[in-house]
Every structure is written in structure tokens, then in C-alpha cells.
Image 1 (cartoon, each protein chain N blue to C red):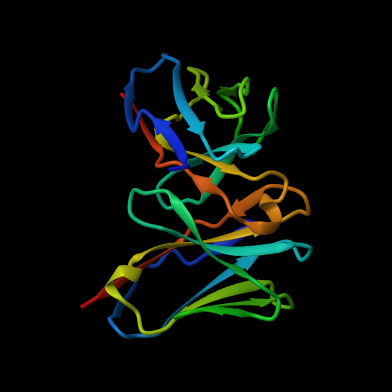
Image 2: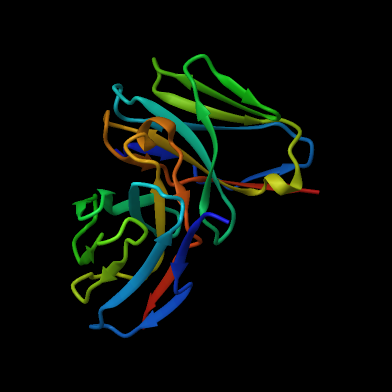
Length: 110
Length: 116
């Protein structure tokens, strides 16, 4: 089983739709959780951290479910510019490096 | 502007040849990393360095080598021992040991290596 797993997609949604991705992680002791965004053939960039209580940044909402060992990313009112691959990133072992999921590809259509 | 510069952006090499990818940062970051990305897969850590003159193997270090003689520079050599070197290579930096907590890695634009 992979340490960090994501549905690769693609998720094809119309503009204005709400879309959600989940990401599961294997180690219940994982400390920190993040979402990165990667545009086609570009480098990844930090989108947002995921806090235990859940957090929101504009149209983006991130949530953590420790009991079921998954994090989620919700995007409201999708824009064409949201089309990208979203990478789930976890600090699996305290003090260790970050582990990346394989990414979920989102395509927002007009 | 501060950032990370990787070169070359595209590189072709013949089997059996070593190749060195450059990574330079002017962010004054202590830690630097090399990742490899294959299609449909997440980033996998090759090597990382938390301070000058020190570096550690990541998950897939076999067939690669690095050096960290200067804070600003962390070159990666892909040796002929690497069985499947065709991939997208990403260099990153962070302020230091805080990266696992803050999650903020700053990436270069990547180097795309193709072995012919």
C-alpha cells in the first residue's frame, strides 16, 4: 500500500461547479498535511496547509479526518484557471521529509 | 528576484553517460532537495542536504550523487548506474528543518532528462 494515495482522475467539471478530492495516508502518526498545485510540465507550488480544525482560503477548503486517515480539498465555483494537478503531501514520520501523493488531475471546462 | 534556478531545462544523453544537473538558490535557505517525478507518480526524494558539506540519501538514491560545497548550490549527477534515468528532476529548498512542519518547499522549474 502506498504511503499517500490519491485518485489520479481526471476530474472533468464545468465552470462554476464544486469539486472535492480526497487523499489517504497510511501512518496514523503523521504530523503535517498540505496541498500543492502543479500546472502541466511546471513545478509544484504550495496551495495550502491542512489544519486539524479545517481551514479555508477563498474558494478552497481543506479538511483533515484523523480517524479515517484522509485529507480533503474542496474547490467551490471552479474556474478554468483551477485546471491543474493537485498533490497531497504528508509529513509521514515526525522530523522526516515530506511524502507526495501521485496527484489528482482536475480539468475545468467552459 | 529570489528563487531557484535549475539548468539545463531539457537534456538528452546517451546510455552510459553521466550527466550533472545544476541547482542554484539565492533565497539563503539552509536545506535543499532533489526529487524525481515520473508520469502519474508523485515526487520521490533522491537526496537532501540540511547544511553545507552534509547530505543524506532519500528514498531512491541509487545511481545518483550530489555535493553541497556552497550553501547556494546543490548539483545532482545522474550516473550510468541509474537504470531508468529518463524523468523530470526537481530541485527544491526550504528554510531548514521547518520544512516538514510548514510544508513550504520552493521548487525550481525542473530539468527534463531523456536518455536515448
